[in-house]
Amino acid sequence: MNCRRGNRVMKYGPMLTSLLLAGCGRAPTFDVVGSFFPAWLLCLAVSILLTTLARWLFQHLRVAVAPQILIYPSLTAAFAFALWLIFFR
Image 1 (spheres, rainbow, N blue to C red):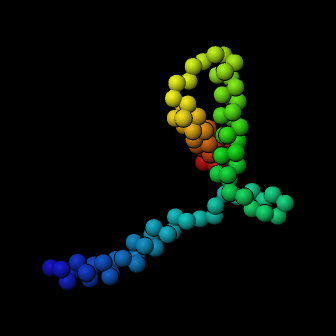
Image 2: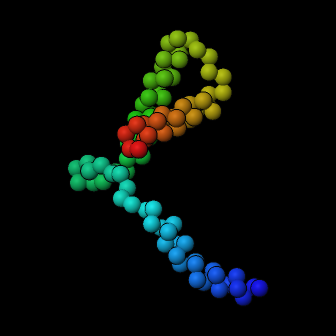
């Protein structure tokens, strides 16, 4: 019975591997002065700016943000994911 299993792995292994690698396509990049930057890097930079703006707004409105070490990185990630979905879906 163990021999059959080994034969299946040898038979279907390369096919499954090629199916997993088939999803790799062209990554979204931006050409900036001849150098290509990944799109996620742009989304991260903009999300950090948006988080800084949100922090200023929270302080201006006197909103108490209790666990700051959890809130601001989560807010940055949420902004980055939202920007990615909006511009690169």
